[in-house]
Amino acid sequence: MPATDVTELLGFDHLIDEEERLIQETVRSFVEDRVRPNIQEWFAEGISPRELAPEIGALGLLGMHLSGYGCAGTNAVSYGLACLELEAADSGLRSFVSVQGSLSMFSIWRYGSEEQKQEWLPRLAAGTAIGCFGLTEPDFGSNPSGMRTRAVRDGGDWILTGSKMWITNGSVADVATVWAQTEEGIRGFLVPRGTPGFTSSDVPYKLSLRASTTSELSLDEVRLPGDAMLPGAQGLGGPLGCLNEARFGIVWGAVGAARDCLEATLEYAGSRVQFDRPIAGFQLTQAKLADCALEYHKGLLLALHLGRLKDSGSLRPEQVSLGKLNNVREAIEIARTCRGILGGSGITLEYPVLRHANNLESVLTYEGTSEVHQLTIGRALTGLSAFK
Image (cartoon, rainbow, N blue to C red; front, top):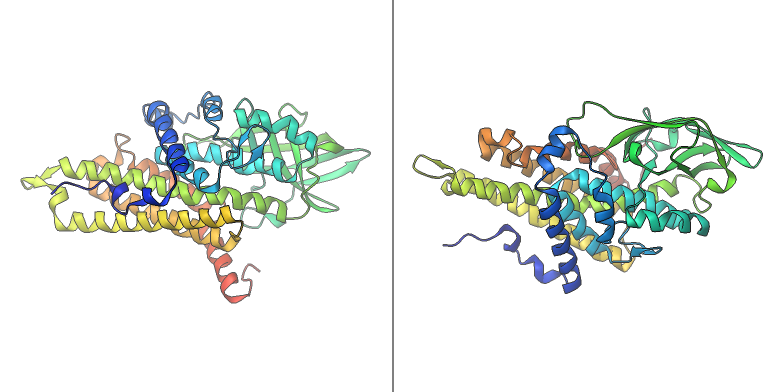
């Protein structure tokens, strides 16, 4: 009997509309033409090609779920489908788009002044400028409320001192959204590249997200004008609101990485012959493939459900945690299972599986570790916080 394409097994296409399907197909075509021919080399060499940014911007993918200021204004499901196709190529590509749109741009769009929006959002949407998001510090990841970066008033200016770590796009960004402690609580500031005292350096020797720029930001008495502060954000709710936007993209992106692993493994298993038959015909292999396909489709349906909730305006943070926890955890398991089916071929960059597995190890712990999301869900279930 003929084989069924993994994407058609559950009839998912019937659950999305024509515009959503067209956006997904457009992103998939871009990935096939511009990313897949090069991603092995970029990953191996640790290259994050900045020249792709204007091309991605021209497709309308940067801040695509935001409205106005040159943003496409699509629905959440369309944004999710774009993230799925981007991460099917590589997590680093989806991370760039997520950080640009859901952290850098969203922080300005949601909390910025009209002047800040007009100055930065059109360029960020076009990809002619790149943004980053400085929240995590060397000693404070899961507990951002303990951040040591400080901003103090000096006349009409602000003076920022501190450091941020694990910042995607950090050393290539034209503007950084930096969160700091002030006498008024945590506030956000826009720090343009070239501001005296503001420097960045890349994190060396990465084994994961190698096709993505990861940096440390240093702020040594950085003087900013008073209007550099984001007026609409006060307290930890500001940066956490941005993180929920980015986590939504991860829910979809992890499914894309899982699909790419499964498709590559199905093709390999159908052509790899052992004991005079393709290994796809053995019961143990089929059991593994069936379990992978099951978890992939469950994750896809969960992502779609959360997307519909987001489009209705009713998506809650603990629901995003459900999606991020499940989909990243299952995507890693799918990648590991597929690597085993590929045998020795699974450890080379000829196949995408171990590259995805390595990347997903980072995705598992950024934008909230699995444990943080478990506790978020636990708090929702019990009404009791176990964070402290």
